[in-house]
Amino acid sequence: MASIKIEIEPNQIYHIWTHANGSENLFRSDINYRNFMDRFTRHIHPVGETFAYCLMPNHFHFMIRLRPKEEIFSCLIGKKRDAFQKGLSNFLSQQFSNLLNGYTQSYNYQYKRKGSLFIPNFKRKLIDSEAYFTRLIVYIHNNPVYHGFVSEPGEWCYSSYLAYRKNKMTKVSIKEGLAWFGGIESFDDLHRQLSFEKLATIFQE
Image 1 (cartoon, rainbow, N blue to C red):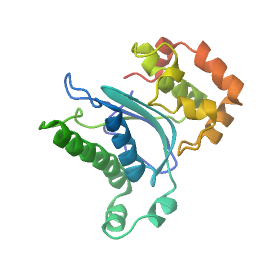
Image 2: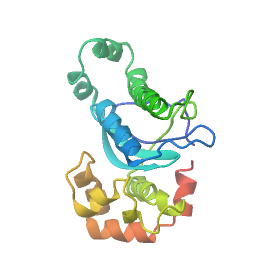
Image 3: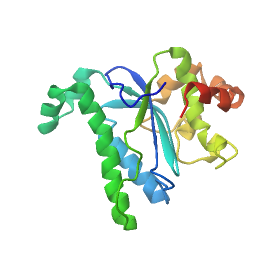
């Protein structure tokens, strides 16, 4: 079961997700999606590798492996180094909080709104079995299909699916991700064959 209380540790893979507060949407336009991913790159890429993501109007999913402690520390300067040394898990959680808080401030300014945009505390689940790596990627990519936004994962612009299918230049770690599948043919097969409903019982929202 996912818990907001589990610590985030280096070298571990996590399913990270959250929803909009109430009936709000997180993203109203293409600019919003791009703004969020720019902030994600700024706050999260220095501390984690991304294997899959999907942004939808009212929630998002990421599959991330936190980088080794020494690698994270080497890219930090000033006050961030001090915070890092005081508590690694808290520092990593704060990076995600900085992402969400910064995006909320930008969104509120753009749409002249006030208050929280996301539900309190982002959710995370440790993925410690290699058997689940490919299944989580499929689950994330098929979310827009399940929620009725598109009929195929390749029709949704705001996920990592097309980066895998078209071998695009990207910050997503597609080479290692495809290696877990055993190649692009197996990637395609599993995206067609695996039941979203069964996957949802593993990676329950």
